[in-house]
Length: 146
Image (cartoon, helix red, strand yellow):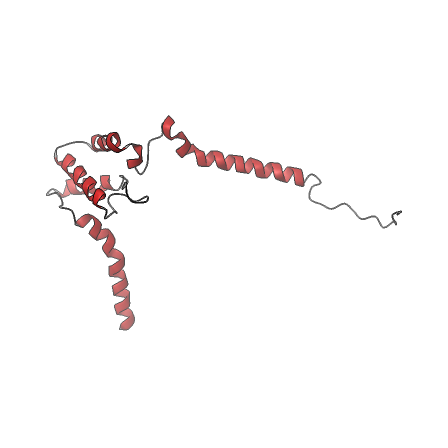
């Protein structure tokens, strides 16, 4: 019985943070619009948290941004218009998945470029050190003069 109680207690404490973060806000009356607001909130970065969406964050700024998203959805704006407004106001950093454009090329292609250079360095190192094929030379049993 004691283990069962601990299991239930752990389950509840794990489930509460995600449920509470978005539930503290006043939901929209239309459930379809509320689902749309939640989905959009999952793609917008909380600016004061570390790599967390405004959907998952409890920060005051995240609550304000969720409210802005809801207000703009209620006014009839499209998701693209809402994200455009937020990007105009806060920059591409507000998006959890920033667009691919010249300003963000290093962000998108930098890891692949670093990986290619590292691979080329490993190949070059192996070619230099392994010129003999990695096999030691055969030993000669004849005595060597000193």
